[in-house]
Length: 496
Image 1 (cartoon, one colour):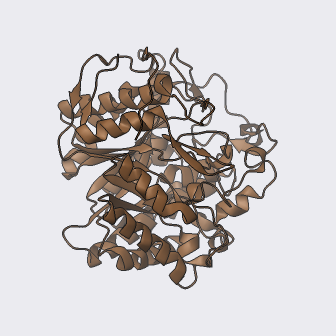
Image 2 (cartoon, rainbow, N blue to C red):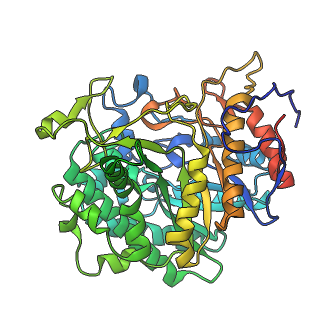
């Protein structure tokens, strides 16, 4: 691998962390990357695969930037061996990928041997290069046939998911030890059914709370089923995405109350059922009008609280919030038009009028604030309140950033000043949290490759490896070459 000279890095993103120091991670600490099936695979109608809800959503005019879709994406389905070789070249020891439900069980009917074979070959390729596979069973690509029956708003989908999960587990458990049931159920419920931004693109709070509960139920059912077939070496878990909600005025009770509500609607609505076997009373009250409580049946919470072995932590940014500055109006006043003319709604069900307050922080190309110290606080809080009492570790299963990459004539991107600095800052936050007692066993950068970024299509690039979508050439960016040195040495070097 040829190193390119790195431009001088002023490190504007690591506020609060001393980037002049070198930090050492434990030899067992896992460094890797993550992707998702729909975002990279392509081959959307090949070898038996049928539409997912995202294939259908991409066909809705205005749903995705410039009408982009996942039919080709990064063409990983055809380039998988080369992509695994690239992971090995970068020294990754863990690769988290998702299996496509729509490829393995098209239409949620019988198993598709060709679909299963692709993932079996992927696992073998990874193991052959000394890379540990980490399998996520659901990263949002629900078969469209189930979507047409109500998707996650239909309680039956939870049972269909458990069946699919167990079938995949039985086929790959001999070679895969790390298993995640769901990726970011907040996105599959609130962002998809209340916010309108993700498939199926609805703006109904009642749908959102139903989907949230049924996703949790599906997780519990799948975990229970896999546990019965698992050995002691298998690690079962779930990946949640988190925010850190701070009051705009820490001395203002109304702002403190606003931060509590956002924490409840984003974090605790998933954490508490999984770790404590109950929904927080304040969240049930906040979402009373949407009807969250009516979906809870006997034994649901016991199933949801089935013990897990690891918590996947996805973190991108926190938020500063303030109390509403206006009284609630009619329901229709909460729905607005997106920039492409489709209905949208604040996904914070029951707390739609709480305001996000901008801070003087750097921002990514997504417009997200860069707040690495929020990750440190999040990990310490999770350790203290959830994972510590449960006696399980955490792994950062996603963290990364999209920036407006500018390739040179050879397609190389020097992202030293932004993406590299972003990853460095967040690794320093992880290290600091570990020093303070958080049990964190790994960090998986999002993402290995530039890919289909959901409603943003191919307009936003998160990869540490550039993908030229015309030629499908893979070109490691400065951040990838730097990350390779970090993974090889388990050392975070000082930034000059």
